[in-house]
Amino acid sequence: MQDRREALATMFSAKGSKVNTNRGDAYYDKLLNEMTTRLTELENTPVANKVSINEVLDAEGLTRRDFMKWASAACAMMMLPPAFTPSIVKAAELMNRVPVIWIELQDCAGNSEAILRSDAPTIDELILETISLEFNETLMAAAGHAADEHLDEAMETFKGKYLCVVEGSIPLGMNGMYGTIGAHAETFEEHLIRVAENCAAVVAVGTCATFGGVPAAAPNPTNAVGVQDVIKNKQIINIPACPANPANITGTILHYVLTGQAPELDHLNRPKFAFGYRIHDNCERRAHFDAGEFVEDWGDEGAENNFCLYKMGCKGPMTFNNCSIVKYNSGTNWPIGAGHGCIGCSEPQFWDKFAQERPMADTHFKAPTGGVEKTVDEFGLGLITAASIGIGIHAIGSAVAGKKGEENE
Image 1 (cartoon, rainbow, N blue to C red):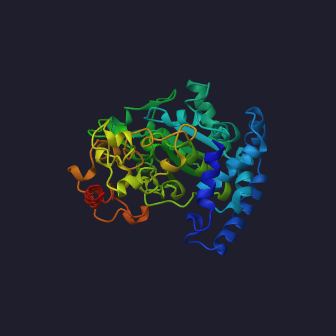
Image 2: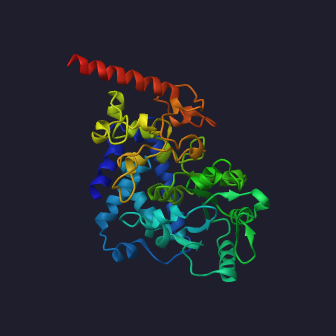
Image 3: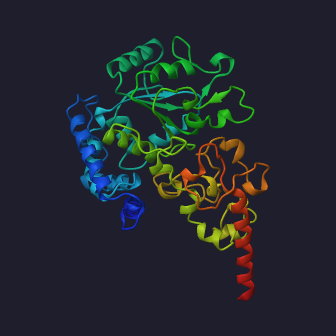
């Protein structure tokens, strides 16, 4: 696990890496000064939760060295130079100044489960113990009127300062009657609007909360929508995927602690540090794609040799996420590493448009044109898939080239 963190840090902090591509020293000097000012101000605010990061480390048997390695990896994941690592450490130590109200709407609670089962140095403790988690329907003991009273008290006490974290979509059908909550039977829509009204920012976690997810799949009987379709007057930060990677949730909250604002976002309000990469570009099977080596059928020789899964429906070429870098289950693996193609779960309408085991070039969906090297911003708002036609042509061309190479041997 520690080796993976060190490799991750090296990947992004080395000379010529992503963190230094377009920004000079002046930019980072200014950013570091702003973060230092922000952390100093935060340090002088009242402690919302008295549990400290040092207590969490001691309780889990983790050393200061473990913590510094985690901070280095977190710094790299957020596309910051190594000089920012001490600021990451300080931000983690001050996370108990940031109150969080986490609400659960129309979903399976998979994102909460992912956090609870995340890796060392206990990202779940950093969020659920060090951060002041003032309300969470899934984890809290209180229920009914007691839960409602606690929520009201938390919103009043931390008015204008708390982060509203939302998990799950919002059903608007039947005047919201598909989903109600609490002793007063608020609809999910009413609940969200009330909690978001006095928050500092809204963090939508998981594809259900960001784009409607599986509940919004055709025929969408509950008329499920994402948070940004309901909340229009607040900063929305979308952290999609099914489930969202705990590292991306932690990185987003760390950024808020460091700066008091959202990280740089793409056209879908996703943090670029996590969703500025395409699965295809960092995939461990990319070389096979370029060589025209594909799995043609489950269990064939290509599958045995970990060939590219594009022809089996992998949506890595049109999906933006850092799964291939951060991975899941303590960095153990991810879908493509386990032998199944990406289904594009961090993209809008993924279930209807992406979740089929065939290439997009073979579907009836018309894909936008463009090369496979497009960046997340070049796709623009509303371009859901990617250059699937171009990718399909490239795949065919690569396969032909691969076969010619075999004939010439």
